[in-house]
Amino acid sequence: MTQQRALVVRGGWEGHQPVKATELFIPFLERSGYAVRVEESTEIYADAAAMAETDLVVQCMTMSQITAAQVAGLSAAVIAGTGFTGWHGGIVDSFRASSDYLHLVGGQFATHPGLEPCARHGGEEDNFLPHTVHITDLGREHPITAGIDDFDLVSEQYWVLHDDLIDVLAVTTHPTQAWHPWHRPVTSPAIWTRLWGSGRVVVTTPGHSLDVLEHPGVRTVIERGMVWATRTASAS
Image (cartoon, rainbow, N blue to C red; front, side, top):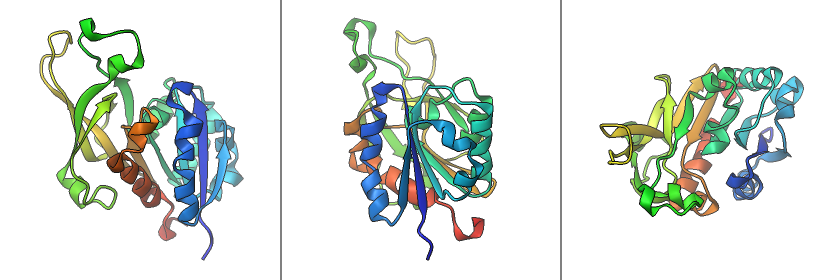
């Protein structure tokens, strides 16, 4: 059997610790039999030959810029069967100026609501809220999330704008608060998959910090998502 090839693309905003975060998962990929290549920029996406032989892309690249050729190369690879996955801002808050990238992923970070203004002190903890990630009925049967119970986090709770061409495996609900402008609770996808051509996309929105990535539920979802997204034999 040909060894599967994973491409880890990392960089962007250092607040999400792209090197340390991806280093948490590279050993899993290697133990699972992948040959792992690491790139510190998105230039590789424009290399058609390299992308054609890649079975899985794991991206941790918050914000940043991407060229039209690079996003076209990534999209073409996914359509041809390359899997694409990531967590938190590294996949769903990447390349804000690229509508083509947004179209590929199916959702875009909008905000992470914060604490009551009088409780804020100017640090990242101002945006750490206790919240629950609820597994959906679909998620309870999907191989990525089957057997995982709803779990609680105290971290950034992503509010995501999205389309209907995603299969939502877990959600989280933003409540109404006196200091916020919305008037009813808003439920946002927290984990989803997307079929794109012959490829599979998996997005996990929790993962702001290393401790969240090491949470058993989050880590299991990310690792299973890598395996599930990987190019299947039918897409080869």
